[in-house]
Amino acid sequence: MFSITVRDHMMVAHSFRGEIFGPAQRLHGATFVVDATFRRPELDDDNIVVDIGLATS
Image (cartoon, rainbow, N blue to C red):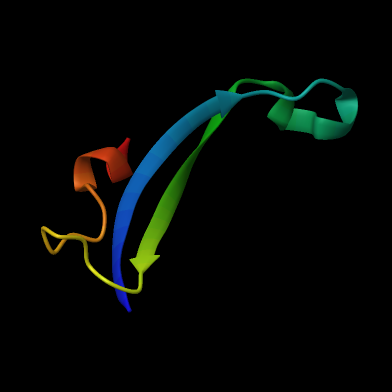
C-alpha cells in the first residue's frame, strides 16, 4: 500500500444571529487545517500515488 498526505488550511469569517450567541454575533473567524490522505495498492506507471497539483486543489 502506498500513500501520500497533503495538508492545507482555510480561513473563514462568519457571525451568528440571535442573542443566545452573545459576542459571536459579531464577525469573527476560524482557521481549519485539512489533511487529505490518498492511498492506492500499487503505484501508477510513473510510480506516482496521485498528482500532487491536483491533490492540493
